[in-house]
Image 1 (cartoon, helix red, strand yellow):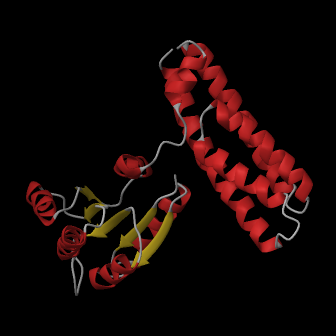
Image 2 (cartoon, helix red, strand yellow; image 1 turned 30 degrees about the horizontal axis):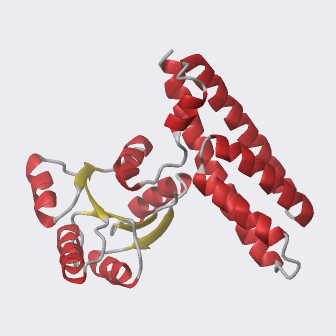
Length: 240
């Protein structure tokens, strides 16, 4: 659900904007000022995607992409998605990006919508919309109503989750309830985080810092689920 994305740009404002956009979408972000720094970070970590400026000092985005692809080829490391960004988008620039091994080349700044589309191929499904459609017999009006009900329930539970941070017993019961609603949509990440929090709440030796971490993980999963429910509800409403 949450991707690890390496953002590479020598301009601070561009790094800041893209970092804020990715954070809004619920992804984890690491920043690099140039291709050389980015390559060191990439070699030493795990990233689902790299979004890099094409033209930078020391090591540009083209050279970075070639180095990543070469390392993947030699080591057998799974291929990550590499996206180039440029302020001067032309067919020649796009062709150069492709030749370097990039998956795509986009004009910056990226809109939030374009960013979602760009990351879609590597984003795991947050919910199983086809399963939800089958639950209501593919009735569009019923689907829209169910999605809105799930979103309302998710919002209420999210608020209560924030209010019960210190009440371990109540947190465990709430996590169990959230899990039941999440299973309707087959929201696997929310179900997983609920089950984890339930186990933690039953552990009498649990440290407060660990509980806080698990509550935050569930909150992030619920936030991402809300965005997906809202998106599907909007589409189902327009389809009526």
